[in-house]
Length: 324
Ligand SMILES: [Ca+2]
Ligand SMILES: [Ca+2]
Image (cartoon, rainbow, N blue to C red; front, top):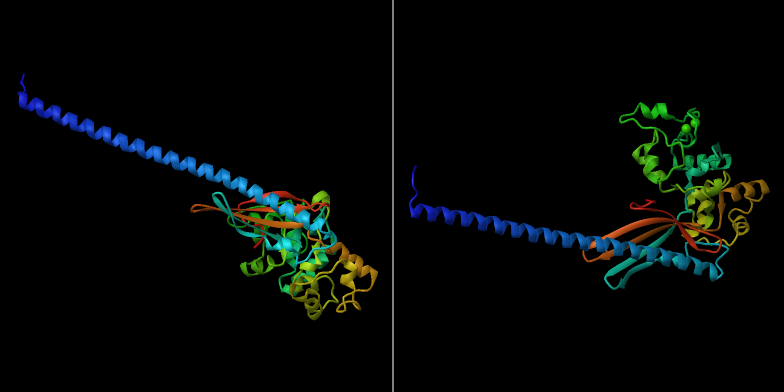
């Protein structure tokens, strides 16, 4: 047996001590790092929680100003001139900067109106065809939308059901329900990027409450959407009705009496058809809230619906904008 000299023993002890020290110090660094990480996590969770509360506050603020709009006697009609459209920008609170805005959603055609209670709504289909024709988009997009929503697998003439979508790569199937998000329109067969980008400037997807169609607000419609209200409306009339986005008709009768259309929209059958499509009220709104806390910005979106007292109810929230 080899006996170690005291010198060698000393060397081994020293080496052991050094190894122990290295382990201890890396453990200390690891624990410190974990501690910092936990602090950062807690900080993030706290900020997210606070941002949620601020968003909630902004939505309550939105409901308040919408009710105030009704209380100030604005129950009859809404237009692009309404004060609530200004929103709030950069409001400083304790530890955050809040911004919020409201946009009308009844300023576009709701494609979900094409199928009501699993049946095609003819006034909406005729309207949408006139709109597609003005926009120079293939009319068959209307049938593709109908087939996407309806519950059967029988394609409309020019439409497309599951067998068309299952042949794509990757394969997918139709929704068999109303559209939930505007981006779903990009999934339609036969729609290219250019048509999609054009279409979403004029159409929207809103839920139908109690199986009832939503109505557009004539005061917030752009000229192509006004023109599609009736075949007799020319481009020039549509521009005059739009009044450079300042239209402010108090009632639909005021709209029909406008000097640009009074001689083309005078028959009661025409008026009744337009009344099914449009009104002078803004009931659907898109809320955007932006909460800036330190270096982070929390952005969220919500769809609001006004009730008869003017209050707004959150229908759903989204982390992506519901409108382009
Ligand atoms: Ca179908
Ligand atoms: Ca079908």
